[in-house]
Amino acid sequence: MVKASLIWLNYNSLGFMDIALKSIESVLNLNFDDYEVIIVDNASNDGSFEKIKEFVEKKSSSVRIKFVRSDANRGYAGGMNLGWETRNEDSRYVAFLNNDLIVEPNSLKDLVNYMESDEKLAAASGLIYFGDSKSIYSAGGYGTDHWDFNGICGNMLEHECPGINKFHYVTYADGAYMVVRTRIIKKVCPAGKPFIDETFLYLDDYLLGLILWNRGYKVAYIPVKSGYHYAHLSTKSTINYYGIRANTALIALLSTRFSWIKSVYLLRRDIGYKILRLFKGEYDKAYKAYQDGIRLARILRDKIGFKLDLHKAPYVKINYLDFILLDFMMLNRIHHKSLIITHEMLINPGLI
Image 1 (cartoon, helix red, strand yellow):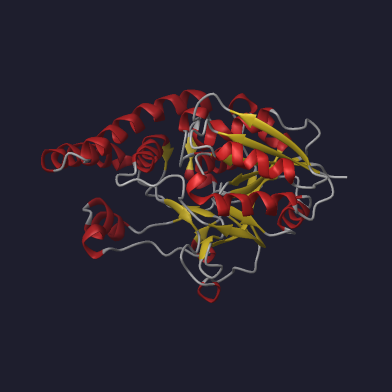
Image 2: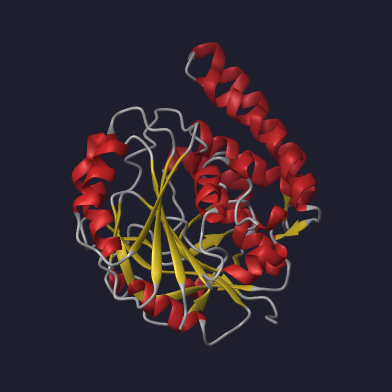
């Protein structure tokens, strides 16, 4: 019998407690024979942990439940790692779940069944909708060779997403709800943990996917309806500090076809934020995020111990004209151009 652990991460969810409790309830009613639920609280200070604990303790459930409370907010990476360290050692798979995502009852069983067919498949995620149950949040994750990472078919409707009903290899599995094979994570990831604590937020699932591909394993989108994500309820911000920090670290860390220009690319960002700070004080936060991203890249490089190459993973190739005109010269900001990526646009390198 296959055993699994599901790690559910909470942080200050009082403002959307109805969704958080629906998420917990969906987790406790999964159609899976043998699993445990590990509820990790990231030092919430709004009373949400107490409400969640009370709700769970009143539920009649045969599922094994563990509570883990952090002494500090460790972000997604550190919080999930805390759960990872308390998992049952017999768990062959571990699922990671946000507190604003309601899961489909058969999702864990269906994802694990797919993964059982290929021992090289190290991580996977399924079809995740936004909370409206119509538009797609993610059908797996993509990365481009100019360091843009996001959800495949994001904000599309099902009929707009070619290949949605087919298995696809992807750059990374979406951390809102993904499943990993325990044995491979312990073997190839730094310190035998799925995430690097210092990433904190927004870089964790990207980095895991890249590490797995670079170490000879696979990451996939599995055509399984997995859940409904009421996204970003815990991470609202005017200037997205962690988003800028994560993207800066990726540019500095990851080798792509455009690596020859990355020093100029980063310099442009450095100078741009310095200038913007003169006109708007809120860009002090953006500039600090850029600086911290450069420092984070150094930390990650040491911990990973080898050079990450995007081209060992499935990726999206961006042509030079788009890179120069629409990204490097920032004309995409003027035209509000955003990438619309489907599975068919991914380039798959030679797979092991």
